[in-house]
Amino acid sequence: MIATAARDDAEVYDLRGLKCPLPVMKTRKRLSTMDAGSALWVETTDPLAVIDIPHFCHEDGHALEASERVEAGHRFLIRKKA
Image (tube, rainbow, N blue to C red; front, side, top):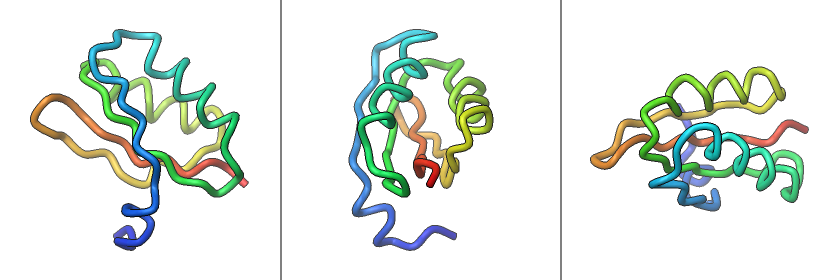
């Protein structure tokens, strides 16, 4: 389970309304500007994000700490690789 502090301290990146491949492309770009070990919540309505975001994290070495279904789509908690 993820510590509440990690969830609360993470920045939220709203990518709702964007379609594949934009959520992954924008997430990659945003993470590139963040410090190693930083956490980022990514919110998306793209149904393919449940496949694309975990795959992106695995390929790029980031930790996918949470994947949650929300009313309008999904949200993912990603920790940037060290």
